[in-house]
Length: 353
Image (tube, rainbow, N blue to C red; front, side, top):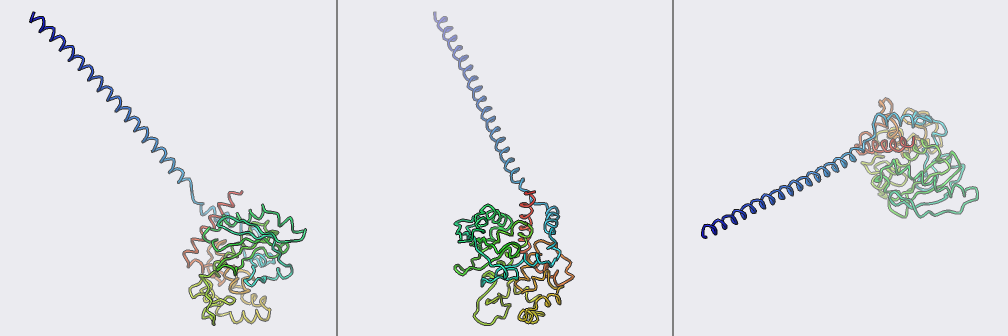
């Protein structure tokens, strides 16, 4: 009886051990499966993150700078269309650079025949123009005044090639007209806000994109050289170049330009200006000026030279006129600005074609 009972206990114990052993194997198998599944999920997550990272890197790499050689070739063709960049002194070439002086009078002969009529004034806030204020105009100007599509296109073109930080001083965008083929654009320093400027466009003369570009660049040259970081009002005589009633600062672009290129001829220019013989003055010193309009005063000379600095390849410097282009290469910030403007022009204009 005891032997049977002992045998029975052994059988039960053996059964329990077998069951425990089988259960342990099942647990280990399940644990291994969960580990494998976890490792698989981690691997998939890592792969997904890697693919996402590669996708982001690819997106960043897709922003490729404009090919400099291709851009230079494109702009050479674009700017040479009407021979302005080759020094043409035709009437059209004179008109393209004309601007409105700060006293509100027109700076060139073309504007003397036709009055400038303001059509609409926009307020500028960053990249946006808004709050248009329309003037009362004659019936024949209504169509130009209401051509908001062209007005917006001109503004969009300007902000696409001119960097935002260079436009911070512009607080008004004025649409005017004085008839076709007269003054294309102007800038004016506003009196209501310190160092605030208006950019003014004749909407009747915006069809030629190259001429529009020349003029916008020229006019920006005035803002760049006549803003409040470049001028100082001392109330007395100037020891530096004097622009209108303001003295230029010693380190200003305009004063350095004047000291380099105008001191030997300034008194002759003053006499020619007073006698209304600037044409003769230009003929005498034509090798010193890029256009005849540049000879009208140092303010216009630096603006025209700035224009050529942007649109032309660096010249050899064989003439004083060419040296005026090279003048800007002494300023690293202007060289960087030139590169940015040219790149922006190519991105915008080449995309249009």
